[in-house]
Structures are given as C-alpha cells and as structure tokens.
Image (cartoon, rainbow, N blue to C red; front, side, top):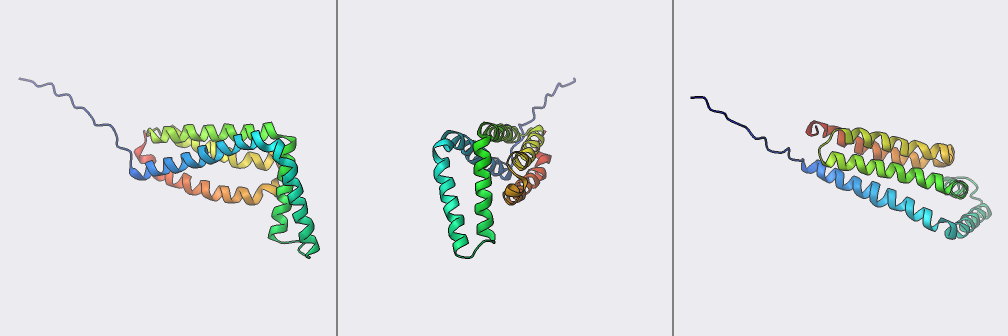
Length: 168
C-alpha cells in the first residue's frame, strides 16, 4: 500500500537581526527621511528668512573674530548655499527626497517580508538618495553630509547583504 504524504513547510522565520535592521531603517527612512522632507516643504517658506539671517550673522561674527576659515565657517557657508538652493528648487528637492524615502520604505517592507528584491530596491533608492542632492544643490556644499550618509548607508547595506541568505 502506497502512502501519499504531503509535507507542509513551515514559513521561513525572519531572523531577529533582520527584524531590528528593518525597524531601524524604517525609523531612519520613514521617520527621519520622509517626515523631514515633508516638514521642510511645509515650513520652509516661513522659516527661510530667519535661517538665512541667522547664518549670515554667524558668518559675520566669525569674520570679526578672525575665524574666516575652518570647520564651523565652512559648514555655515555650506548651510547658506543649501538654504538658497532649497529656496530656488523647494518642490523638486523635497519631492525627490520624498520619492527616494518612499522607495526605500517599500524596499525595507519587502525585506521585512523576506523578499530579496527589497534589498535591491533599497540599495538603488538609497544610492540615488545620496547622489541626487549633490547634483540638485551643490556638490561642494553637500559633500560632507553625503559622505556621512554614505557611511551609514554602506553599513546598513552590508548588514542587509549578510541577511540575503534568509530572503527569497
């Protein structure tokens, strides 16, 4: 007598490390990335004059103190460049940031569901999310922030890549 045995595979269990990574990424991309872009879009017009005035006064005070070079002077100058670029292209810059934040969130959700394609979507979204501000704002003014973002992104991409074996 032949027996028909049907085996039922248990669903794949998501590793705790991958769960923690997805939660941290969700907070970073969604909580910070998306909400910050939306907040910037909504509040920029009203806060721009005060921010420019404050940065300009800061530069003047540094000049008076003889600090016309250095880290803080450079960061303040870059801040003014970034503010002016935002004032000229607010919709484009915040829209692009929102788009890549949403794509990143979709990739994170897919990886949470153990879908390998989510990793590639996350990778592409975050790569462009880093590079586009260099082109839309100013390469020199954004370089230091982009390097910091690239380091953090690289760390997360490596940690996700280690978990690819758990994804389908």
